[in-house]
Length: 196
Length: 143
Image 1 (cartoon, each protein chain N blue to C red):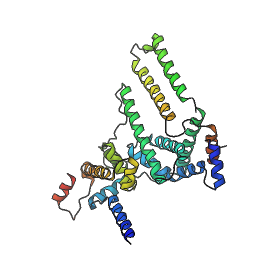
Image 2: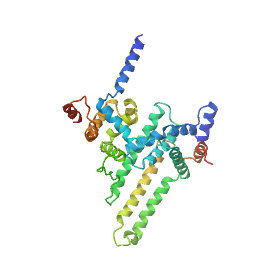
Image 3: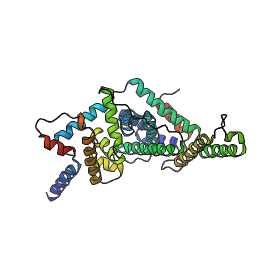
Image 4: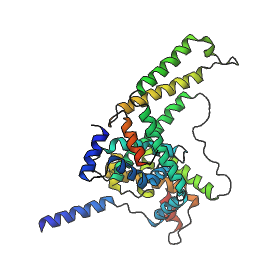
């Protein structure tokens, strides 16, 4: 079925055309897509390219989208797969390279903690999480997807997402312990136990 | 009434499953991470550049639609033929072995082959048709 036939049918029914739906998808989710890709890729400058590729793939699948999930969940499923594909490509490329350049030099955070150094520190902390924990944490706590949506998006159970979130928080508490201000209502012993 | 109660129970169960209760300390940690990782609002210029990037990708795929496998396979074959038949290519000008560079090029070409093969076998239609690009051009007001 050609695109022209689809458009004609859509126009006749008063439904938005595929191009219109795609334009709306890009306008509505562009910012969140770039932000999520950046957070999942550790601030890699290629995050915008990855997000653009995800929209490209979404365009191709838009004609078949039947509304089984929300459009947002459906698109972010594509985005996360695109991020995962990019990471596999980066890993494969490292095998081919014989020089010793690291794919992404970690930022130097030895200087006093300004805004950009703090951001770099947080990016590194996220990067140190295992992939599945990082994805669950970013989608639930930073991008505000529900646990159920995240489970659907990543193709796992709700229980699995909760386990990933629990482990991610535990790791981040430990990694960023020195940045946290002490809670005056919590005793030092309880505070120490929470980070372990 | 029974049906209403079971629907209500189901909704409550779904809400409980969906909740991720955080301690006050973890709430602060998450809020701090959200604030610290926030790179601010994207400008209108950034958004326009992004849309242009998407459009460019669509155009590129439309232009090469139908031939990516042939292109990638030909490029890979050409590289390998040159490598084996032109001795000078096997050594860089300074006498060092240029094998790593050629290996990387071959690897990248092999990945290009994989990528185009992936596209051709993906769940969507595969090749882009030029009229699809026309429709997107119209949507993005491209002359």
